[in-house]
Length: 94
Image (cartoon, rainbow, N blue to C red; front, side, top):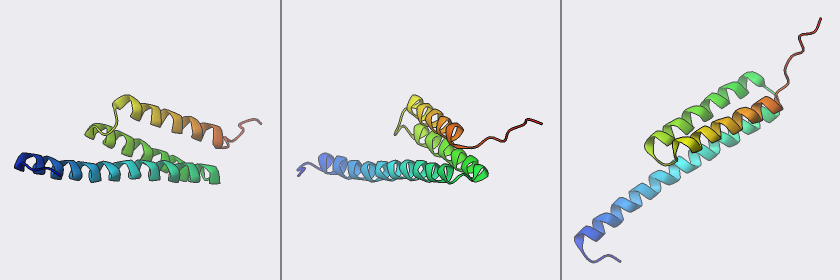
């Protein structure tokens, strides 16, 4: 346990940041899980909305510094690729 007042304050700050980071981590995971579940169900409009949510959450978390910008880009790219491979596109042949 910390003994000096500055070390005690540093511990309090560290605990607050830890809780905040856990919330961000779980929010990102929940959003991705929801998106993948929606995409697997086959509802393309709901999947598109869920993909938009993934984009929003990834960008906001990258803005705060919890993840880097390139990781957010990777997350968005992988999920877009997942959606493209799991949604049925209508055939436009006559």
